[in-house]
Length: 132
Image (cartoon, rainbow, N blue to C red; front, side, top):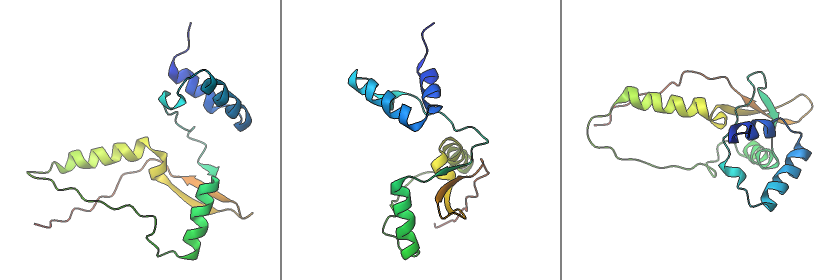
């Protein structure tokens, strides 16, 4: 039986980092786009991971100036008509549930290593403000 794309992504997620690199090089050489494979969820018991180089760099810059908004991305959206608040809430909860990065904070271990702390799924606390 031919494995499906989820099986391949699941097996890839369990490989050691050096073996992942070899696998990625191999499929790139065959013209396969790894980005088209599904995202595999991290096992529930695995709630921390060492931060990447870029994350450590951001952590360092944040330590220098915790009030800086240099890396904030802001935006606005104008909606017309009645807003279905429960639907908006469910949409954001689904996003947070699906994407670990929206439930991740960073901490420094006792050894000084910056780690990602992935928080469990939680109820999103959205504050409603009437600005009409």
